[in-house]
Length: 446
Image (tube, rainbow, N blue to C red):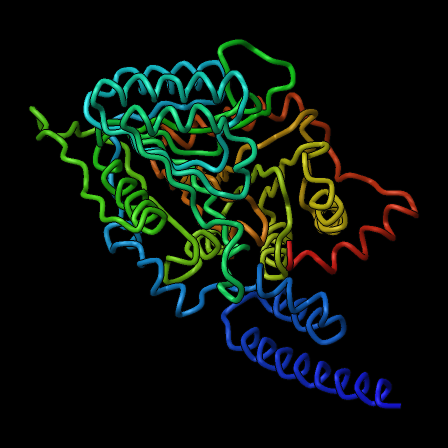
C-alpha cells in the first residue's frame, strides 16, 4: 500500500515539475523573436512530448537570449553596419584545385599573421597538408590562430592540431557541444569561413578545409563550391568579425591586425561591396532580411544556389510573388545532398514553387555553394545556406558585391552550373511524399 502511495506521490511531483518546466520554456519560446513556424514546432514538442521536448530545448532551443548576448559580445559596429566598403582585388575560387593552391600559397606567403575560422578541418590529405603548412608558419614566428566549430571536432586531425599548438599556434573550438545544462547553446554553430592573411587578404565563401571542397588533384567526387579571395579595406571588416568570434571562444582579447599604410592611394576601380554577418551576436537577422528585400526588389532575375533549401513561409511567399511578377526565379540545388532529411523537406517546397512559375535545377553532383544573383545589381557569396538554420541560428557571413564585373562573373558561374544540371523539382512517389509531409513539420527545428 505504502509502495503504491509512494509511487503516486512521486508521479504527482514529477508531473508538477514537468508542467512547471514546460510552462517556463513555453513562455521563453513565445518571448523570443523567432519564425512563427519554429515557435509552433517547439511549443508542440514541449506540450505533447515534454519528456523529449524539454531536454531537446535545453540543449538546442535557445536563440538570441539576453544572457547569451552578454556572454558573447555583439559584433563591433564596424562589422555590422553593412556600410559599403571596397576591395582592391577579387579572385573567384570555383575550382577545388585552384582554391587549394591559393590557400596553400597564402599560408606559406604570410609574413605576420594567419587568422582562420572554419566549420570543418578534415582529417584527410587536404586538411592535414593545410594544417602542416600552418605548423610551419607558426614555427617561424608567424601568428597563427585557428578557430574551429566544435560540432564536427571528430573530423579534425587532432594530433596535428596539438602539434600546431606546440609550434606556437593557437587553436580554439567554438561553442562546445558538451556544456552545463540550461546553457542553451548547442544549437548555435559557427558556420563562418574566413581566412585572413597579414590583415591584407582574405578568403571568404562556402569552402571548408577538407577533400570535399579542395585538394591538390582533381576529384570526380569533389563538391561544386565557391569562395572568393579579396584584398583591400574589406579585410579590416572581416577581421572585426573574426576577432569577436575568437575573443568569445578563447576568453581573451585580440587586437586588430596592424596593416602597413599603402604606398599608393586605392585604385579608382576598387570593387564596391558590403560585409554582412549574421547570427546570435548580431542585432538582427541581417542576411535573411537582405535576401527577403532582394527578392521583393528584383526586377528581372533572382537566382540562388544552395545545398539545402529549407525556407520559411515569408521566403516561400516572396519567391512566389516574384515569379508571379514575371521575375526569372531560379533555384539550384544538388540532385542529392549529403543530408537526406534536408532533401525530404526541400522536395515539397520546390514542387510547390515550380507550380507557381519558379524554375528548379538539380545539379548532378553535390552542390555546396551558397550564392545569390539579383538582376544586374547584386552578387552574394558567403557561408549561409538558404535554410532556417543558417538564416536564424548559425553564425554566418556573406559578401554582397554590387560591381558589374563581379555580377557578370557570378552569372557565368551559374551558366556553367546549369550545363551540369537537370531541370525540374525532385519528384516523389506515394510513400516518399507521405514521409516528406511528416518531415516538413520538423523543418523549423532543423
